[in-house]
Length: 95
Image 1 (cartoon, rainbow, N blue to C red):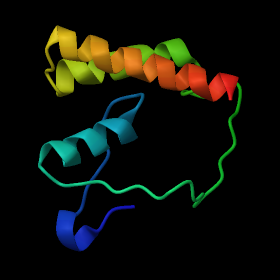
Image 2: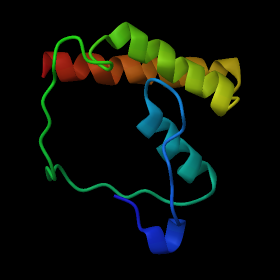
Image 3: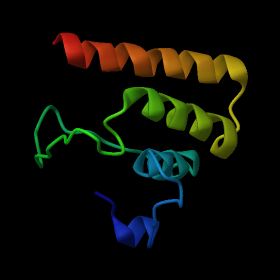
Image 4: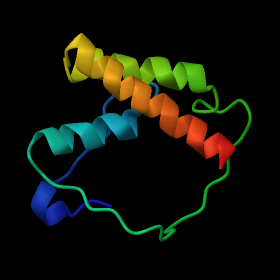
């Protein structure tokens, strides 16, 4: 959720995958802070086979492209972030 009084109107970037993630990164880059809730579910969603985000390798490539093109992060930082992304994804499978 966004506080429009603080952030104004925000639109998702026009990219095919991970556009919500790219939006959050752009907001954080401006110096705003994000706060999480301690494991409190605010919504449910269903995962459908064949959806745009179902292919994890495509999502990995999309996140890499966001780090490279939109965020212009150095290679070492991108590599560390992608490694964390992969580890987090594997934890969700195992747990």
